[in-house]
Image (cartoon, rainbow, N blue to C red; front, side):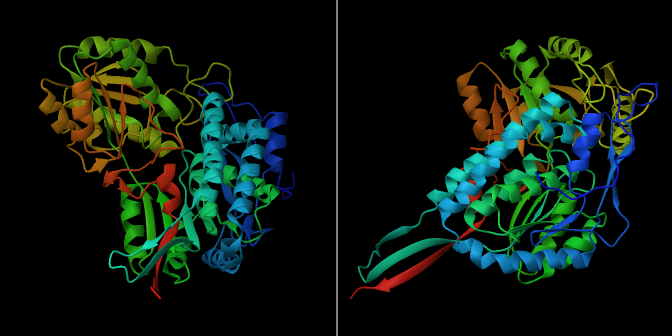
Length: 509
């Protein structure tokens, strides 16, 4: 695999303990040396002109690699490259685009151990979960390689009989894709794959905290045969300064963003100036409703998946556990037993199930949310604090008797804290679940099929897990309602976010 020469990796990596963090292993240093450290513009790796970005291992807080830092003018040059490549890529046969994406899928499977370890190093998730993300992220490459050859239109006589209607699909044009730090591979593949399948070129801005996986993936795409200029990557420490002129450029035709709702609102306002097509996957405040007739064993297992996957740092993470008052104590006891069995540490260590949070601010936020809830009468059943030692760790926590008005019920937690409140009636459960500006995903546990159907209809979210704590799938449309965003990623719907229908009338002779 080709890559750019890099500076020697710095020290880093260990679990949260009082002992000094060990040095990087030889395997980790070798992998980091193969990760490009430049900007990827027009098929070339380029050095930046600004002070480099320092990427840290959140398990130790130590720098593991320094990489190029894009200035606003670099972003425009990346857009220049995407614009220059747009016509040729749009004219590339769908089968050719499909085969390139399929090669990318195959290469990802060959290199899965590298990608999993790299995500663990820069983001912190346990290796088992990082391997799961490689599987999930790869499915977008495979799915959209199959969808590329199924883009279709319509042909038929108009109702008046005065002509023939032809509806064709065209790529929207150059796209700007902004990805988050928490799923550095899957969020890149979920955006890049449908864009390329549809015939669009892209400029990708990965998160400053976890850019290495995207750079490594850009190299993989090159190895798979993606032409120069079709994919460009510009990581930066000044996201707003780089993004604003790209979004303001009239040559850009599409903006896709995954991140917080406040940032999404600002980007939507900017995108409105040029009437850009937009896809926004924003914040969540997912309800997890457990009815009195639920299978409590299944509900407890679902809670562990919905809450502690990715260390709780997922927009789909269950945020508010809304449990019927008759079973709340037993449910809390079951999840507490499971939470106490979780092992905290560096994601590369054997047996670790909970890695570090992304940074110090995330750790502080957990403490503040728990302190607020406790001051209002909530009880901490297990966890509740940050352990001593290196890294940004927080104990897996269960807190119950959470009162209305607590910050933990209104803010996206984004950490390993499970907060339980209670309800008495179905209508109360629905009202509580819907009492948020967000509407990304909801989870419901009940044995009553009729009630389950009612919840599908009544709970106001873009996605739902009925008796399951995991809903994401490349073949399904991912996205929310209300302040959780607009547009969909994945599924049949995903490729249409990058296509524009064109209607042509051919008069009858």
